[in-house]
Image (cartoon, rainbow, N blue to C red):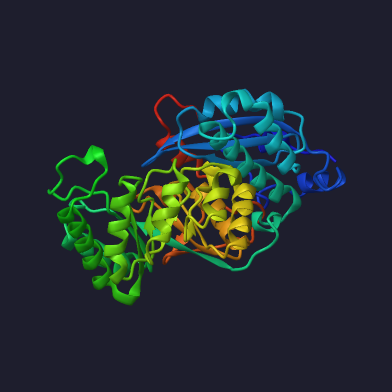
Length: 410
């Protein structure tokens, strides 16, 4: 049976299962339900969002295409280009094998951490989208099925006056009332006007009181209408982090995120175990091996892997499974486009201990336009039942928002 591959490789077409012709699907079934499908090419395009998003597309000889996303942009497209020879001719359904193959092949580039891991993760996400389309199942099914039909989203909030407690409280109320979120996050590593030397990571008493005033204003304003977390961005010394966390114990803080730098797990553990304020970390360590000590030594109350940064969908599932052994919930860090945001939601649906997935682009008015489907509605993501990730790139918006000098997918 013949297939019009000219249409399938139309650069203006999006390859979702519902758009593929019946003839193409029949050919795929005749080839062993996709077992004979081979990868033919991998392409990237970088989007100029509030972060540089690297979109990844994997093409096959069956005309089916998978879309993924790598964390941020710097270096990822070049690394993905170098990985193409290791993927061409391979079966896209062998997700685990291909991912580990890339880790081994890219060891010289540092494939246990950093941008190499994120580049591999972008490919791994695209493989899940592709495999789901080939097998005609949603991506969460490839992870073992789902615990929930929707995943909660927490909105990372900002104001023009981030150091002003009243301005923060006003924004929190606006996001809850007008945008419909019942989970928020605000920054606490903001200038207080009392600093003497920010480089030494030490918090003086007036600085701690200023941060407590932000927490008090926001949590009292939203009350029971929303959970509120606070991010410190690895800013403080161990002693200062302990004093800050202790000071915040009287408030309804969902969690205090990254109060100390990520390298020293011993200090992280000491801070966490010194307070009843829930402490969260994890976005700046890679793969399950990087998260292991945080969990085994009970150095966090909540683990916060960033799916397209930590190693991909299956790696995040492994982290969640390890966390579950220690009864630790998962709140996925996420600064991605709708593509990786939806991929994170599929992971969140497939793990028992999911708290929420971050949304970092509420001030970017075209974020939702990058795909044809609705992603976030009233602070939640409904998990699609369409094959793969269930999102379709709007190529006109992709082309409009590309980083200068980038080329649209073929």
